[in-house]
Image (cartoon, rainbow, N blue to C red; front, side):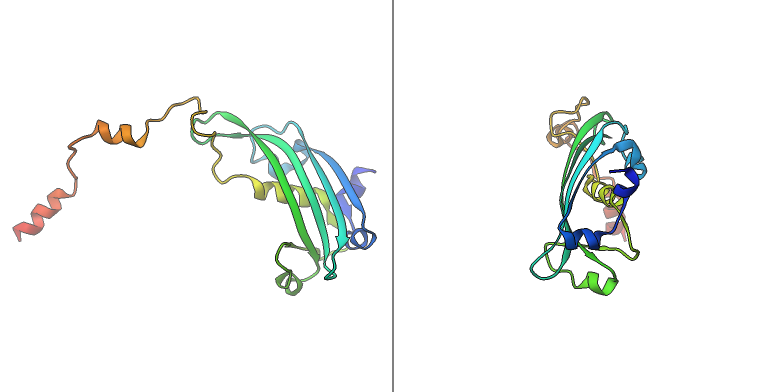
Length: 171
């Protein structure tokens, strides 16, 4: 299938037909995601199934998997981040329909005839990124002192606001 057909699809038709799409997208093709990660190497794989559930909700369900490198905010070094996103979106046309989407689905408003699968995949990946990326405890190359070490290094340190208490008593 050509990239143009993968990029712009009619999700309502695919849902009615119960079709699936498997995509392999280079991270470098996802410009918004590329700007948030350290390197835009590697590939993302998406397996998406379109369908209509027993309530008549048209949906896209599946998984998106890949790996990117992000900057650890503790040691500032690169760290691999495995992305494994479960997708479960209801395809709707209006905000009103989006407000009525049942629990278990996230609404996806399609206000044109087509939906870009690349944009959908990229949106889901961006939403799955951590707010603050950090290696697990003990893995970072820079070792930060523990809270106990910090408090033991400054015993008897006077409260800088103690002077204000003295002023209040003097009045």
